[in-house]
Length: 377
Image (tube, rainbow, N blue to C red; front, side, top):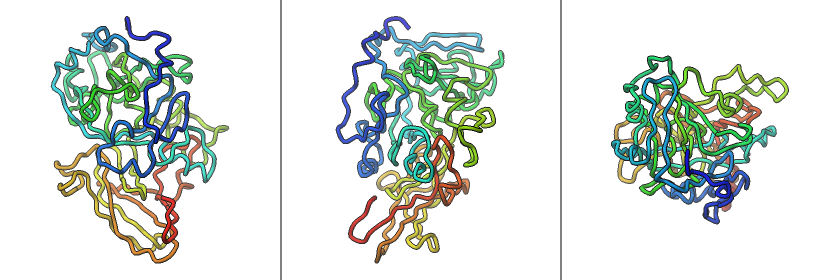
């Protein structure tokens, strides 16, 4: 991509809010404090978690920047930003979440590898851009396609940034063509976040947003889009972000036995959010103060003044749901929170049931020890 990256540009770090909890400096990974995370339904850009696998690129000539679309298609194209902006613009409210969210809690059971995320490696934003389904039509792929005439079944996103796991090559990932070409899946090539131009931390000038799927598939700093026959063979599709049972360790792991993780299972924290993958709504959030013997159903909300109903057209299906309940706590206790989504998926009761060597997808019941008059939430 001519005129895009100067070698020195990688050292120019963006300005960031001082309240962020930095989990790694190189590459930069950080999350907001718990209290800040749920202070608003739409997460301010400054408080949106930062997840990177390599140095952050700087596009220094937006006029020359383009995305190439290649692969198993008859009509490859190079799209400049002006071409993408000419397509209908959509705003999609969607929660993105790192698969390693709540990894530190899983490590308390048994040590796992990965960035030590607390509970705030997620955020809810209004993403603006062109639907990927509209972009694919420009290269001859009709909406609701599952296969191209040349045998393409997956859409691969290749980033500008480079990472050590790819031996200095680009970060990449893919989703099925059937999802990419479905306008109702709301997959975007986004150039705005919360009504403003994307900043560098979040993928300027262009990123993919795949709602309802782990954040690793929402590739930032898009360089090219490839239509391919099989899933992307990149490191983060084939040798990371897969869910294994607790019996698997680094000595007996066989990456080929599991598919790449896509949808995010239901998850909740006492701090007040619940989120499920695949566009499923939150049917119920239950809270217990007696070890799970009795449960109290919490109220749920998204937008102020609009009653939340799971899977209702008035609700944002790709976004988190806030919950609230008033509890009478008379002594020191453990508060437990668990959620059920609209497909009746429930959270496992303990971390031990889902422990895995990469420390991903910790969707177990969230437990918080509370002292009357003082809390460690």
